[in-house]
Amino acid sequence: MNKAELKQQILDLVERYSALQYAEKSFTGGADVVPPSGKVIGAPELKNMVEASLDGWLTTGRFNEAFEQRLANFIGVKHALTTNSGSSANLLAFSALTSPQLGERAIKPGDEVISVAAGFPTTVNPILQYGAVPVFVDVHIPTYNIDPALVEAAISDKTKAIMLAHTLGNPYDLNKIVHIAKKYNLWLIEDCCDALGSTYDGKSVGTFGDIGTLSFYPAHHITMGEGGAVFTQNSDLKRIIESFRDWGRDCYCQPGKDNTCGKRFGWQLGTLPFGYDHKYTYSHLGYNLKISDMQAACGLAQLDRLPGFIEARKQNFNLLKDRLNSCNEFLILPEATPSSDPSWFGFPITVRESTGIARVELLKYLDQYKIGTRLLFAGNLTRQPYFQGKTYRISGELINTDIVMNNTLWIGVYPGLNDVMLNYICDRIETFFGVSGW
Image 1 (cartoon, one colour):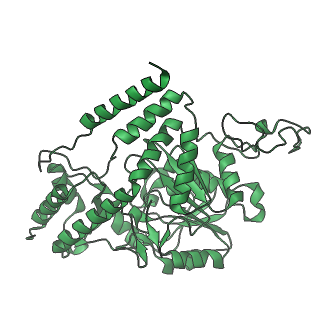
Image 2: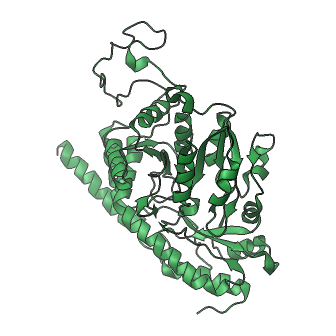
Image 3: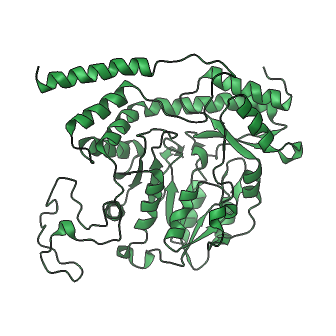
């Protein structure tokens, strides 16, 4: 038996194993857990990962190259670069905007960046890590995104950028935010970690600003275990992002390749001698934030499923919205931003203050019935322990941000949930509030 035949035998066994491991299971409400998020994988992902491991290349290779190209095509951008997490993607996106190669537009310590405090920490952390100052603006409920009417008042002569996430997959008002960014010559980073497949005016989120980011953690729209991506239309920014990701080097050769530029020993940069090997010339204080080819192989198989995943998330969201209209007296239900078509990450609900019911009581009740919930991440970042002593500015008041912190939670819409599970969730919520459903 030759290598090709042995390899095929291995892959056939993986497919048989996958059919057993990931066979659909029955669900019993109250006995089985309804998770708020999770991965959906099977034979295609496992076979790709095994094939990548059999290649023996391990670091980024042919699977990663194929994944980056297909991802860029799906989003509609020129460049997509993988990295090891969504948090690293945000770090790379912001790092790129500090590059001296950007001249006067480079973000420097003390410069201000507009964001929101109702979100995930690593949308904001890079701002702090580079000595810039986050300026927080309040959010709008029930979209849970930045209130664009408040943004211009937050701008000062120190403002250099806007860095915002599309909350739980719901695009923010990109027409207004892009208009403001252009008016004041500000960079715009779109954190799309929870929004792969979401569109605004028919275009993918992440294509409106200068740089977009994604996460491929198992809770997200597609997964490769750990992973993320940074994408852009701007070829100069792509080179800078790639440099920060790959140790800060000036060279842009792929792993295992040399002399892509055709003049490996013909450069003179910094005060290095002429002809110093370009492969070991560094233009940025960089990192090593690449992924393995096995991760990319998993992601490549997930891309085949992505259109179905997006549709399932939308259908699950709509089912929850229709059913939970019965609880409008007690809950604020989510609304998509006008002109948007969200690929929802979760279904956010806010307990109305008029009910006199504490959110924690609903959380404990759902937990008792094995229904998974999540808060809207950090709630209000400025009230988190690690934020004490940090330099930031608040523009106006964070009234809705505090409401999110105190009263908001979200439940799952991921493709692993079926109608039986979703109706069970709705039954329990209706029972909690004492309303009749169907």
